[in-house]
Every structure is written in C-alpha cells, then in structure tokens.
Amino acid sequence: MPGTDQEPRVSNHKPEHHLLPENSEQQNIAALQQELLLAWQRVSRQKLLNKIIQAMRGTLVLDEILQTTVNQLQVALQVSRCLIYRPDDHNQMAVRYTSEVTELGENLTDRYGSFYPHYHETLSLGKPVVFSQIDETLPPEILLEVQKRGIRAMLIVPLMYQNTYIGGISLVQYDGDRVAETMSGASEEVSPTAEEARQAAFLRLSEADLLHQQSLHGREWTASDVEFVEAIADHCEIAIYQAELHQQLQAELAERKQVEEALRQSEARYRAIVEDQTELICRFKPDGTMTFVNDAYCRYFNKQRSELIGQKFLPAMPSDDRELITQNFRSLSQGHPINTYEHRIILPTGEVRWQQWSDRALFDEQGNFIECQAVGRDITKLKQAEADIRMALEKEKEVNELRSGVVSLVSHEFRTPLTIIQSSAELLEHYHHKFSDQKKQSHFTHIRNAVERMTQLLEDVLTIGKAEAGKLKFKPASMDLVAFCDHIVENLQMSASSLHTLNFAIEGDCSDAQMDEKLLAHILTNLLSNAIKYSPKGGTVDVNLICTDEQAIFLVKDQGIGIPQEDIEKLFESFRRASNVSNIPGTGLGLAIVKKCVDLHGGEITVHSELGVGTTFTVTLPLNNSPVPTLKKDLS
Image (cartoon, rainbow, N blue to C red; front, side, top):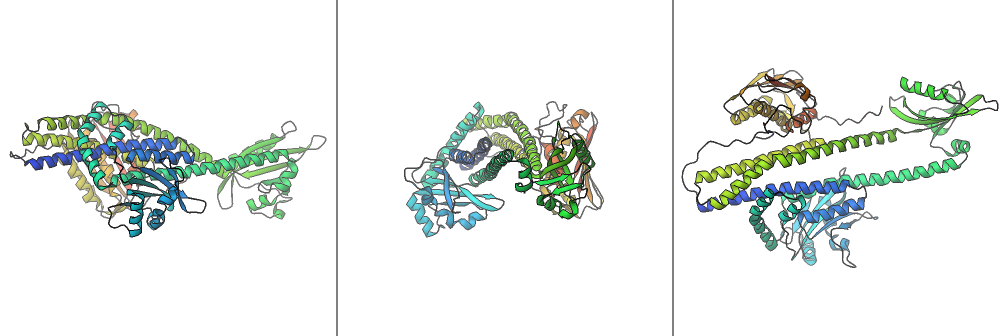
C-alpha cells in the first residue's frame, strides 16, 4: 500500500488447478526477470548518482566538477564518450570537457558542434535530444553527419539555470563499440553483499541478452537513462552556479584586500574625505552637531547637505542598537581613540539595513575631545551572505544525517525482501518442474510483494529527499474531499486484518476544497497505516473529517500502544521512531513525510497520546489552498 510501512499482504485466493502453457510460464519468468533487472538498475544508479554528487561537493573548482561528471557518467552508462559543452568567449557552444583523451589535433567542437545549433531551439526549452543511426526521422544533414562520424547513438541533455540554456551533456555511442555490462560495473561501484552478488548472477542472463541486442541494433536510450542524466544535469547546474559564485567571491575578496591595503598606506584623513567616495563619511562635535558629510552619506540617507550640517542627526534604529552607539561613543579616549562596531538602521521605507562604522576621536593639544570622524559602509549583503552560510551549514548537517539514515535503512530494510527474492527465484530456477501451478504462483507473489516493498522504500526515501531539498512541489487543485478520504479509508480497510475496523465520519460542508491530492494521500495513508500497524491487538480506528468555512480538520484516533511523551518532540524527524515500537517493522520516514506535506499546505499537525490507550493525530489544513510562498530570512 503506498506510503505505508506495512508488508504487502498475500492474497488467500487459491487459483484453479490447471497447468499453464509452457510459453506463458516462460513469459512470466521473463517479465519477472525484467522487473528485477529494472529494480536492481534503479538502486545501482541511485548509488552512482550519490557518488557523483559527493564528488561534486568535494570541490568548488568548476573544471574539476565537470571533468569528474563526464568521467563518472561514462562509467555509469558505459558509453563510448561523454562530453560537456558550454558557451565560449564568442557565446558559441563549444566542447569543454570529455571523458576520453583526445587525439593530437582532434577538434571535438568541429566533430560534434553541428548537432548543437541544429537542436538549439529544442535544447533551449530544456528538452533532451535522443537519436541513433537507425532513427528514420533524422533530418538528412544530421543523418549524414552521424554516419560520417561513425555515431551509432547520441543523447544530449541541456543544462538550464533559471530557465536559461547554459550548455549541455552529450553521451555518444560509436559503431563497433560494445555496450558494456552495466550491472557488473554498477556492482563494482557499490561493493555488493553476498546476497546481491547471487541476485546479480541470476539476472545476468537477461541482461546479457539485452546487451547483445543493443550491440546488433544500436544503443536504445531508455527513459531511465534520460532521467538519470537529467538528474546529473540538475546537480551540474547547481555546481556551475556555486563554483562561479565562489570564483566571483574570491575575486571580490582579493579586490577588497587590495583596496584596504591601499587605504592603510595613504593618509587616513585625505583618503577618507577626498578619495573614498563610496564610504559614508561624517564628522560631528561631542554634542552630535554635524560638521561634515560627504556625498555618499547624503545619497544614502536621501538628505541634502544643508539639512545635515549644523544639525543633530541620528537615523531611526532599534533601541538596542541606539544604546550600543552611545556606549561606543562614550568609550572613546586618547588611549582608545578608535572604535569599530555594527548596528541596524531603519530607512524611511521601513527597510532594515546593516551598517559598520569606525569612529575616530580627535583631541586638541590639551587633550580635549573636540570632534569625531566616522566612516561607515552598508554591510547588509555581507550579513545576508553570513546568514546564507549558516543556513547552508545547517542544511549540510541535515543532509549528512539524512544520508546516514538512508544507508542504515537500505542495509536493514532491504535485506528481508532481497532474501525473499533470492530464495524464491532459486527455488523456481531449480525446482519449477516439480512445483504445482499454485506453488509457482505463490513464489511469484512472494517475489512481486518483495519488489513492491523495495520500491515503496525507495519512494519514501526519494520523497523525503525531495522535501529536504525543497523540490517537493505543492500543486493544489479542486477536489471532492469526502470521496477522496472515503476511497483511502476503504482501501486501507481492505488491506487491514479482521481485527481492525475503520470508521469514517464527516461534519460540515467539505464540497469546496482545493488541496494537493498527492500530498494529502501521503498524509492520510501514513497516519491510517500507522494507526493500524501500531494497534497489534486490533480495535477501532476513527477517521473524522470536520470542515469549517476556512479549514479542513482531519482526526485519526486509534486504540494502539501509544507514544511515550519524551518521544513526541522528535517524532516528525526523519528516521525517528518511538522507543516502544519493539519488533513492529518501520522506517521512521512516514511521519516525517506527513509533516513535510502538512507544511507545504500551510497547515499544522498535533498529536495526543497515552501509553496503552491510544493516539490521536489532528491535522488542520486550509480548505481553499494556494501555493505557500518561499520566505526569505529576516536579517534583523
């Protein structure tokens, strides 16, 4: 059942006792082998994707990032050559990185450059281009170029940043190159266990046949190939942006150091007043009367010089910052004539800005404090960068924790279904001629259920991964809320044991609802599945839907084992489970997914539980929803 931690149930229906045709049995086995092959390939590619992403994160040097990408992609998809092209100095697309060492005098842009202009319009829309020699729809000039270059198949995935086409990734298969055994290559990358190795051996016959057919008829790009390269392209786009931003910041920092060094070597007062036009400069008496302001100061505060000279002026600011300025001013002395500090101001528009000021006290020959010269600058962007760095570090910490949880989940939760698949497959392989049709079907069902369990685990991991990365989309639409809830309750009642009874009650008018059905299905399915799973002795699960003018309230109440109070605070974190679940299976992802889906709806979720009595989850969502805007961090 989607979104639950329960093992799929095995039907008790007994098939009729008659022999299946031999070719039907072979077709079933072939289909099952193909299904297992695809499941294995998805797991292997996800691990390879994680490895490529980790390699990207190991450096901010753009050349290293993109060269690593083409090298890893060639190994991952076992193609003849992988290329990345980007705009050159003349804004023309040119090959910049390749997975192979080029021959002396070989110009890769000349060799492949004719394809990129021809498909520029398609690629500019963010759409991939796929073709081969046997593609009869190819334009004559492209077909001629393909045959001339000895290209058997080619895949081009564009690199897009903020809807702008900035290059692409090309995968090329030449004539005569044998398609490598991708499964064995993937196994070397991920260090398989003994069970995985035996499973790979079982699947090798199907994969070898597929590879033979591709060698005869040309490389056929599958949807999973395209999706895999597009996933890599997404991370390349982010890496390119981050690397270029890093280079820009390094250049700006170097430039700033040069300026500061020049300022230190010059006469402080002359440079401050005459040359330093970008800094805010003012001079004032001990009582605060302004004696000088430069143009930058006037522009910043939108004041005329005549409005400031001879007047006392202090911009609006929070009271704490005003007290900070007073303390710094009072601490100036001949022994300590300079103070540097930061504070906030509030512009007439209400915008809060950060400033950094350096005050220098000027004394006469008798040691009397006669004037203060202040040089300031706006550091709002710097503060924003600091906040972004802190957020990035927090995000990296969350990603590391998520990664550790995924590794633990894969190592534990995948073991049981893989064992079931292995044992059932071996029995079918060696003893299928001795088994009855009913026995064979039973083993097929075991394998199919195990595959579905693994697929559901992968979907949960991908869902929480998208949510953590901010890529889980919220798409509200008009819906029949009552029918939707009734359908979910009915499905779960069918899959529940005879010990459990699900009651669904409605209160209020729920006809005018606008929500995201996919996210709402995650919420209700996980809550109801948990209510059943953590009520091992059975009982009643009450599902109440209450609609007001503006809200829809979902109450899910069970009579299960309850949740310890000390576990409730962290219950919605990924891979967190209550301490009293004992041997009840689960991944700790269900409630984390629920919380992410509730947040995307702009709603809230609460829980009340009593050990040995039961648990009630209350989810409150806006009845008529719209996408939740992304909020920027308030620097103040």
